[in-house]
Length: 425
Image 1 (cartoon, rainbow, N blue to C red):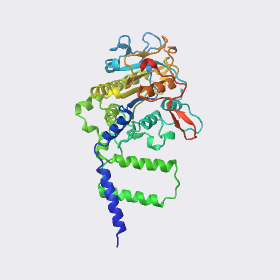
Image 2 (cartoon, rainbow, N blue to C red):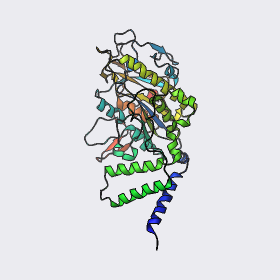
Image 3 (cartoon, one colour):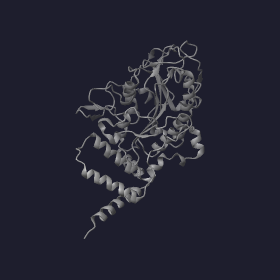
Image 4 (cartoon, rainbow, N blue to C red):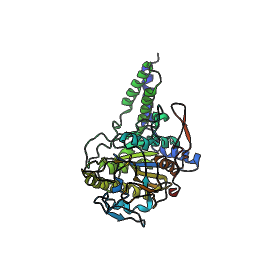
């Protein structure tokens, strides 16, 4: 008589062995397949997300001598005529690789709505579940990989699901659990990623299989999300895939160059991820909601931004990755040119600045200009829709391409009202 329990367990154990012995370089043939099908290597995007609304008048578009200017000085960069904050000296030396848009002008001054618009390119519209543009990039490049195609590092992502694209394109979140500030980066760990034995894995697979056979739940968003999470977890059991999150594999000198804080180490992790073919990585630098004590806080944050972002650009360039990686540095809006009574700056979507570097972007450019007091756009007003169209074009995607939404309405990658900034492309 056949021992069905034994046969089932043996099969599950073999499955577990197959998972743990997955090809240690399965991401390489996946990238090769995409390259052969399209004739070019798929691009990646790294979004440096300055969460809380950075005071860009104190970063990229200073106004010294004006009553709105504050105490920071301008410094020259490697690009004649381009000047940025004295607290960004490393980036000043990298200016040939990046360009600035100093004429961002958006409408939303509420954090939640502004983050939604910045991340999706659209204002909320009824029942439509808009995906973050990280999900869109991951979906369009569709690189089969053991590592999730869209990874968020530090804090909670602004858009947590995959929208109408499905949960398989939701951001995979690393870190952000610790509330401690400073050099501690212990929170940049993937929870429960420690390897288990084939026997343990077989038991878990058997339990999951039995629970699934007993379930009477119809297919739903919840069950789809659970199945997607399980599938991604199985893929990450490949030791080679899991190793991408282990920063201890890097030389001590490389880790030190990025800075020991969670943001700098997050930038290093972003480089490791795009090196393995991950399509979209977000790295959050939190704390920019500076209604009070703006200048002391922005100085501290600028130093973290400068060290991490400078090392990232250097590393990408030296490894030949910058030409295929678009780096975007922005928050949800800027802050008031006027300094309030608490030595702070308040929400200000009307005129702010951001930075772009790498794939598809001409470096050393300054797009747009603000007035002497920073309160008005003097030239080239740029909306979120324009920025999205530029980003998609920069990585070789057609911003007019449509995906079918959850309400049966086709939605373009970027709002059709957006116009790419040809000067940058």
